[in-house]
Length: 434
Ligand SMILES: *Cc1c(COP(=O)(O)O)cnc(C)c1O
Image (tube, rainbow, N blue to C red):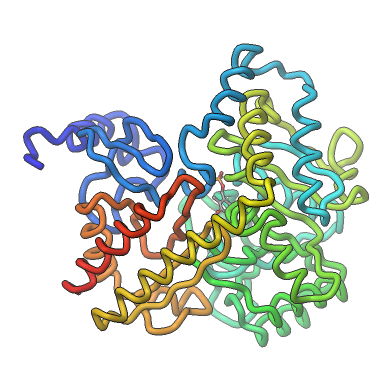
């Protein structure tokens, strides 16, 4: 591509004049991998086209929501119909009930759900509810898990074991994170120690059951079981952040996978987003009736939103959830994702590139490491230079993966066998150069 005619460069320069860093969410800026972000013109099925008209196979899918691919006709019709009836009312609608019912049907740990507009808002509200319901302040989160950018959750581990954290962003006062304990993911000893020291003051433990914000790291079954036991023992709430994994790794979300391995397992609160909006701004949090009733207007925990349960967004989410609830959907999606992951593994192996990968449903992750990492520190031992070569090699061959090595990837129902084959062949060419 002749740079003189590269509209992505022109647009990025123009954007950088009026939008900080040229983007409305930092990872889009390609800072980690270098180069110019692709400005998307339009998308259809498994593809999007950039400002130069260049086509890419899309493995981000808006960071998860586009599980049916772009422009699914059933979803499109539902959105168009809803838009004709009005964009927003600030008064309740029947479709909010339908979406709530549809969510609860598939995630039985929730008896009630509150709809909001972003994962950040849902996580922040779930945290307030956990504190309000328990009357406690302290919380546990894990290094490498992302729960949105609420102040109390922008925190990294302190200097000692089971000490409280430090802010990871300017503008977050130390006092705001003084109640947030940051532990290593999958570290049973730290978990035990933290509960022993602070268990009776803990409002909740918040966790990504499959951590998609450190690419793809599963909480081990024994670790998750211990999280559940300790929360129950000490009266803290177990909060599952399934903004990414919800309706993405399985119809019953990640909690259904742990429930298969651990008798009677369920979280207390669940945070959802991404897929449940089908690409529209929509998220949710829910749990047992007794806890959810503590929210305003029935209870003392305040939470509200002008655009919450937006009629166009709920139409999009509801149509998406109904499509993915069809019985043939999950086996097909899982098989396609597995085919991609197996293909990449085989290609890396053939080229002698250290490589490990994992997937569940329509979500996958891979590492330029010989074994799957179990925590954030291990994820970060991945070779970022090699990842950047792989990223740009794939991009040049029309394959768009997340522009950072600590982000998961997503396959949609619109990806074809030919798309997978093209991707694996492109990766094989790049692996040969690594
Ligand atoms: C994306 C994400 C969020 C934040 O959601 P936004 O809609 O971007 O605010 C929170 N938690 C997890 C696990 C996520 O993947």
